Image 1 (cartoon, helix red, strand yellow):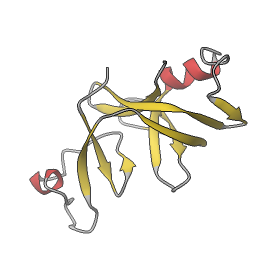
Image 2 (cartoon, helix red, strand yellow):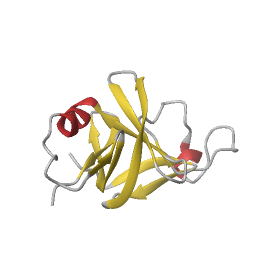
Image 3 (cartoon, helix red, strand yellow):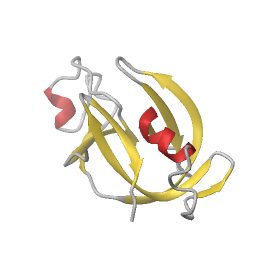
Length: 120
């Protein structure tokens, strides 16, 4: 389900907001006051993303995508599977090995955040 706002630190979408982050995170800074954190309004965004690998979270496995500026975006396995299963094969979204272009939106499942391809 799409969410109204999404958490970013230094431009990277965060998969999970850990309980250790104090109120300062929500005002722009994390616990060590060196990493700028912010809640951004969640709007669809066009981006070319390249597959970087996967990681395990506290409750899910996530695929990691990276844009041309080096910013990373986690994706839930369910949404990654939809791309691989060919649900988007007739769309101009897949432009090469491990590279996908499209309109993306942040979704929230439980306490976790990830991106999914927006279908037009």
